[in-house]
Length: 340
Image 1: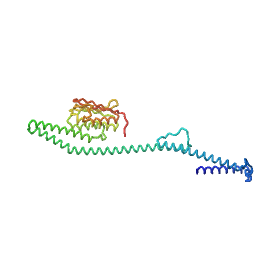
Image 2: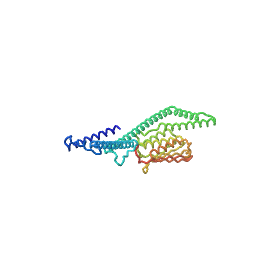
Image 3: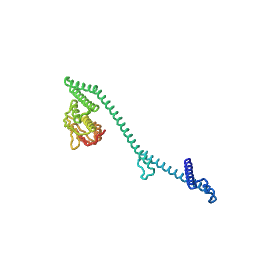
Image 4: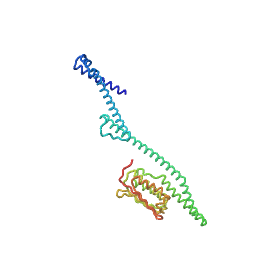
């Protein structure tokens, strides 16, 4: 209401001053305005009619200007609301002055830029937290591996040597000999389980090496710890660094599963690149298993292998026949984006 009154007075003064200036231009003296008081129309002087006309025009223009301002404010508010609701589309018909429209466009671009920056900060923060948690997990796993190697693994080795010496030097009856041999086998199996667990807890890293070099180092280390024979064919392959790390972890997981569950005497490992695909195949002549048997001891490890393969856009094929062995083949396309 106050705005209406203020505008009404302003327009009324504008019309009055304009009329007075025009009157002075024609009449040159104030006496010329007396005619407005002397002449009448419908018993009202011209001066009164001018006052009524000026008041009516001022009131109409005041209402119209306020209505226009309110309409623009409403439109401005709607457009701002659209921006806040992630809708930066502006009306095709220009309903605001060019300056305000340009400000809206600039504001929309600023909001989009700020949103992208915020999303990038959130993603970077999440990656940093994941990296920190992963580093803590690795350190804890390495600590556990050291403690197990220094305590349980050494004790199992000592027990195995002691049982072997007893079987070779002490003359016992047939029943006791079988029990000692069975105990020795159990201890040896526990050693295999411990070696596989240590490999899983403290996996070797590539540390700047190529995938082929890392695989060769891994097999060299395994040969010092396992009883089965390893045959390998390893070639240099072309993969991004992140994909190489995944393939290396897949190989570790596969060999760990083989060591723990296959009871194999021979293992064949193949790493080659053919037709723009890297092929990793691990085959053993162990006990095998039924693929639909979820209670199989290595099922958790197999799921990890499949999940890692999917993460880098590859395919995983597992073939196993009871009492004949298992083949795990992973294929990864060489053409993929490097993840950061």
